[in-house]
Length: 116
Image (cartoon, rainbow, N blue to C red; front, side):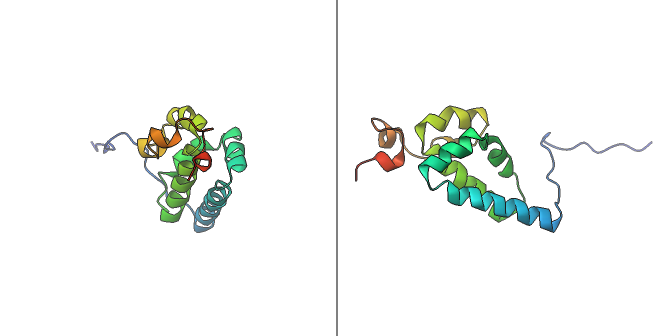
């Protein structure tokens, strides 16, 4: 009788995607990263429920996709009102609070509102 090997850790294994699909996902993540440099577009990404798919992309085997997803989530986290949404999506802690609270408290909730 053959025994089936059990997967360790219980985490889903990452699939190898066809190259064209992998590249399309990388480019889409890159576009979101660049759009997330603008505060009003961050609000659109969040409103379109973009946080959860970005968190899922952190498991990508493609390094560029991972970097784009990380950068986008970091930019989203700079808006204080997005903290709960990031936590709910199970974003890593280093992405839910990228700055110390004293940098954000007393401001309108954006890094761009901090006086220089």
